[in-house]
Image (cartoon, rainbow, N blue to C red):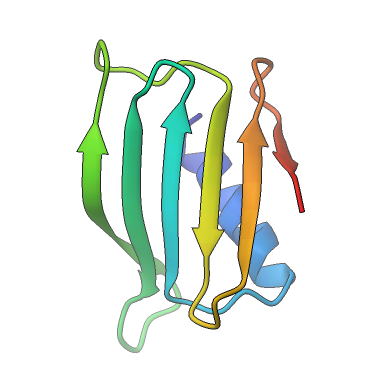
Length: 91
């Protein structure tokens, strides 16, 4: 999972009507986890990211990775990044 893959997921969420700020949590099968807040920078068209928690086992994430995204309205979606690296929206 790289930054471009995460950006594609965020773009898909925005297309589905998700409203920033968007809270994010991810946990790999090895127990590594990260939580962050994606918010729009003032008067700009890009996101800023604030990491709110992190814990890494062996300094890496092991696939599959389960992610939870929650927007400012309380809408939530689970995204599964499978062993092949493909992201799948679960609800």
